[in-house]
Image (cartoon, rainbow, N blue to C red):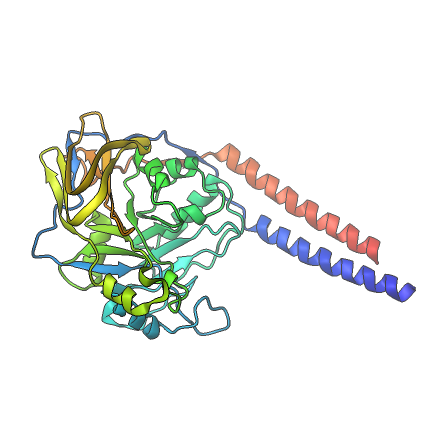
Length: 402
């Protein structure tokens, strides 16, 4: 009997130890400044920013996926295929650019299809708050295990942006506890991943845009399984690039001269049909701005072409057409376009937004956050006391079990 009791105590000690280590890991990585965020300011100005002003008939649209996982050295893998094998699969569907975004590891094989990109996906926290980092020299290994507060997520974005050319917020729809308030307040990222779930509405994007954050939208496969037809070539981006190099790519991503797209899983396992139909996707033939009129022309007739503005309002809707246009009202800060096609394809354009061209090259840029010293001290003191309390309680428990 004593032996059984001893074993049970040993088991309880082990369970308690694991639980305490997990709690301490969460608490120790939770230290953060607490910010006072500036009041959101909608886009304003007499000028309208046209993200497609550099697009012309001579510049090709290059198809790209930026969120791609591959096999890496070591035991922690999220894909069974090596980088060269993954690129070969994407090439079957007409992709020109494939960049790798393995978790906290920069992967490169020096192929033309990468455009010289050094990128990685940062984050291994419980909430799946992940960001795609372009151009960093090294990976940031630190992460908060439970970044539940807006200030904590802002702190991580600030840390990541110090050593990055471009920061993308990954899959907000699949990030636990991402609120509309987060999207209204967070800044310091350039891109947001669209269509990261079943919804094509991207209302979280409009929360950021309504608050005056000029963030651009990409759509990516978040590819882990190139051998599953429903997981590859179902999201993509088309960039207007004059050359296949890093400078041209980052210029397109910063200025917005690209559009994102949802692509159906053609054939649903019939690989030959999938390949053939990916070679003939509907596309943007022309897009731009005439004075205050935003216009788009598509290669095929769409079921509907929707212009979306602040607070996710529909500003204009054209049906059964391959073209649409809308004059941006004087009191409307921005408009973006979504085109829905009969076979399920969806095209998302970047927003046309108001700004003052004499003062800034692009809209937005008015977001600020400052450290609230008193709340920061109280918050971090509370975490410290919790750590001390957990350690004391653990020691008492172990002493009792012994």
